[in-house]
Structure formats: structure tokens, C-alpha cells
Length: 353
Ligand SMILES: Cc1cc2nc3c(=O)[nH]c(=O)nc-3n(C[C@H](O)[C@H](O)[C@H](O)COP(=O)(O)O)c2cc1C
Image (cartoon, rainbow, N blue to C red; front, side, top):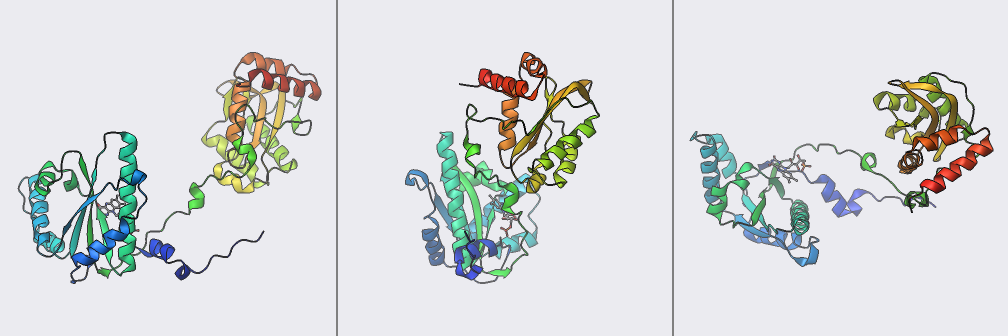
């Protein structure tokens, strides 16, 4: 399968507007007509909204109407600063903003409905910003403290049970600020693409066979044991060499001791790139190794995990070996066959049905 080639941005005007839009703070001395604002709002209200509740209303301040709002903002600011007058420069700045739009939503007492409505209003505001941008207009969404002020709310007729979601300042950009870069989404993305990830607790099975079970290892230091576990994961073809270093690092930041003599070392999230295939290496230390705070580890379940696999392993290991009796049982194994048989038994007995 070949990857679809992405077209240059101008082929995708929505994508282009999303990426190029900036919040605008400096506007040209050019009025914005009410007709344009209404036109933009009629585009914006196509935002998704549950049950078509259309949870919004607006107050536009244009032309001299802006002075009404600025007067209110001035009074509010001065009451907060114990009567200290608003600076002339600030008033001039506010007067130079060509249009203001307050966006108001009903506050439904049911939390689910409130959240849906707030989400819909936010989507609608972003639509407005994008549609404006496409026409060469700039917007900034402001949430200054005054939107919560009872005096301001009363003066502009916002009812109890209504919320001012924001004040949009609108005009033709005098200057467009430099973009503040965004983090690549890949860094915040968890991908589920193998059927295993969808397995329920009762279906998941830590993949253990004669191949990835290493028995009767001599006692050693914690660091050497982790090193050995990492090398086994490499030999098994689950990870690249660099994964081992990340297992050591991970252990330094957060211990992977599970309890009852078991630990589950694994690499950090950043090391996922060196994972070739999900899998485990189980190391059996009959005499135990000194792990931390006087705890000894007898069973090391080293994990190489793509996506959610390590959570599945952790959950299952924690369930299987919650009871020390189960650990004692498996530790008493005298051969690989015996170990695997007991592992199956414990898995069956502790399965959540
Ligand atoms: C809910 C919300 C509230 C915001 N409130 C303010 C605000 O009060 N003052 C302000 O300067 N910018 C405000 N912004 C704009 C952000 O600062 C701006 O989106 C951010 O700096 C990224 O810049 P960009 O929009 O140009 O990409 C707000 C944005 C959102 C989504």
C-alpha cells in the first residue's frame, strides 16, 4: 500500500486557514460592518451542536456602540483598582478596535448538556475566526475577568443561567503576530492498530513460551539483571539495542517493582520507536536479586511494548501474582515445562470472568 501524497496546503483551504489564522491584537483603522459580522455568524453557526440546541446568542458592538461597552469595561476596571482611572493609552487601544462581539450561552444545570453546549459554542467561535480569516479579517477571543462581573453582566442584560463565553475583538489586521509553534500531535497520540489491544482482561494472555523464559539465573545486581533482560528482548527480536539504555533510565525515574518479588522493567515512552514487536522476556532468579528498599525480586517480566501492550501485561501480572502463594507456587518450578504449566494454571485460576 502506498501512502497518499498530501497536496500542497492551498489545495486545502480549510487546513490553510486553520494553520495560518492568528489571534490579532492590532487592527487597521477600518470599520467592520454589521453585515459582514452577520454573514460570518451565519457561517459559524453551522458548527456541530448536539440536538441542534444552537446554544448561543450574541451582542455586537459596532460604530459608536463600542463606546457603551468600553465605558462598562472602564468602570469595571476602575472598580477593581479602587477608583484608579483607566490609562488613556488603554482607552485609545480599546477604541481602535473596530468591532466587538460577545458570545453568550445558556448554562444548562445538567453537566453533560452544559459541556456539550460549551463545546458547541467553542466550535462555533473557531468557525467564526476561520471564516473571518478567510475574508482577511482578524479576531481575538478574549476571556478577561469582566465576563464574570455581576455589574457588567447586569448592565448588558446577561441573565442568571447564562454565561459569557468570550468577547471577540474583530477588525482588519494591522500586524499578524508570529505563530507560536504547536507540538506534533504524534507526541500526544496513542495508536491502537492491533487486535490484541482490544482484548479484554479475560482474553489477554502474557505471551510466554519456552523461547522467552529464562530459568535458574544466578543472583546478580539489579542493574545487571535489567541489562540481561534487555539483551534477551534484543535477542528475541522485540527491540533494538537502544531500548536497553532506556530501560535503565526508566528504572531510575520510576521503579517497576510490582510487589511480591516481581518486577516489570520496560523502556520509556520515547523508546517506543526502538520496539519492533510487542513481547516479554521472563527471567527467573531462584535466589532472588536485591531490588530496592530491601525487596528481593525473583521474577522479572521485561516488557517490549508497542502501544497499550505493557498495560495489558502489567494488569495481568498484577492479577496473577496478587497473592504471594501464586508466586511461591511458580518459583518452586523445577523445569521450563513445569513453570509454563503452572503459569497457565495461575492464569486460569485468577482470570476475571
Ligand atoms: C478560550 C480562549 C480564551 C482566550 N483568552 C484570551 C485572552 O483573554 N487574552 C488574550 O490575549 N488571548 C486570549 N486567547 C487567545 C490565545 O492567547 C491565542 O489563541 C494563543 O496565544 C495562540 O495564538 P494564535 O491564536 O495566534 O495561534 C484565548 C483563546 C481561547 C481559545
